[in-house]
Figure 1: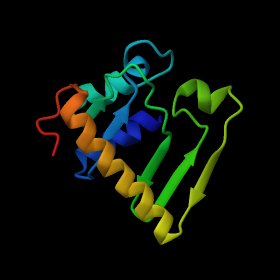
Figure 2: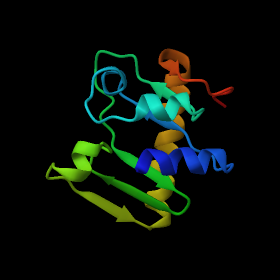
Figure 3: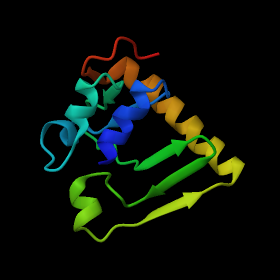
Length: 119
């Protein structure tokens, strides 16, 4: 369901970008990364031996972060947590971290799916 909403937002013109651990794309049960990437959402994989272990989402003026793995398994069976933060300084810090990681993985990561551009 979350994957469908991500694709729907992307199709509707919302700037949606995803960075993920390459093992989550290739091996994780319950991961919808391939479906999201194939729908044209820009997806970068870390392509590294160390895990891309961040678990956060920046949505306009909100950050969601915690142990939540953003998989079907996490939402239906696991014991997970997610904190919703609205403090502008916190949102800016997470947004800056995402931009830093996006730049890093554009250079050394791996692009998947059919997104026309990874601006």
